[in-house]
Image (cartoon, rainbow, N blue to C red; front, side, top):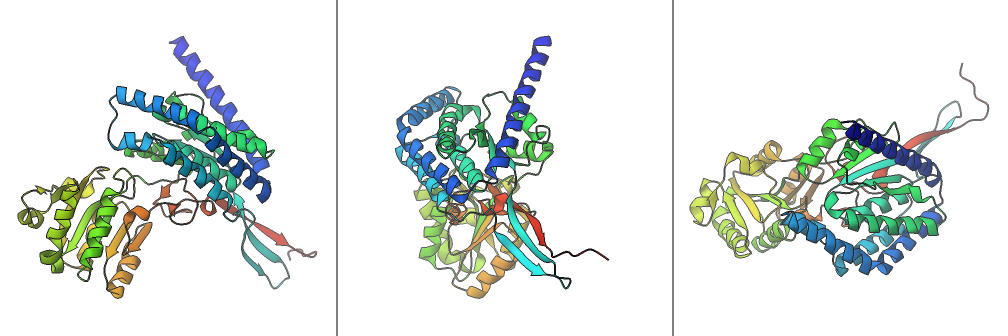
Length: 427
């Protein structure tokens, strides 16, 4: 019992020390020039490419261990790196260097009648804790976005990606070193101990300003329930595609296949397809054929099941399920209002799309659906910071405070007020 307590004390001391180093580094990074930050990012991208063989070898070991543990499916896909994926990670880091520096932006300015001039100016948040599971790319994306926005990053990877993430973090720290910036601005928690997560959620004695979880529902739920600091997150990605009465069939088939099957394990993958009753006779069967031919299992309502014997009858739970697999729930709805009601009842406020040639219906959908991302005639898989032109994302937030949708460099800032006077005193 004593040894367990001692181990916990040692872990807490380690984590608090890491947090303090991050806080000290954040003070330096928050005042670094745009040129310095960009130099660090470009150098890090170069190091990622130079160390590609080492990183891929580490990833192969991580994947082999995961397979021994029985991990499979979408989790393994998220863990996997190959040469193309690693090059894309390096490119994303370099692309972030090309973004406008969000720090120091004047968000608003005005002058009061007494002559005081006010400026609302963007500032870094401070220290951002990122807790993630299997995706090693999050190491680079999160570190690069934090660096660009002047924030220190404290990263806690899942045990399955620990080797890969450690080498990626080392490459990012090498970029900081090359630019003369403190390496402690990017730190990967150097332990696989699960208790490290709880310590981060406590805020590490005030060192952490924001927590971003990237992973499965259980991780996100724990973070949202236990965190003593603000959280940017989404619990689930129950994303919908609605085929409106004025949808072009060829476009509908193309978008639905992409939205569901391009990558089934991402949070922007469509999980429910809603088809307007008005086009069920013309659009339902071609959509089912296209999906089933590509290996997608269908869980449909009674009308959908009656149309095709290959369909399994959906349960109430299917409308609430984030499959993250080649499974799609399909329902016939009676018009736009019914589609929006279904999304509001069962959705997770993540990403929804309408397919229609009717601009009025599209505008109504985009206005009335209360999700972080709403699309017209485009795949839900565009729910990605890179596709938004953010370079990358640290996560997607579905809350309504501060950041919503893909969280990029602009969303990783707060602000302060600068007030310029000429001797004014308050009466």
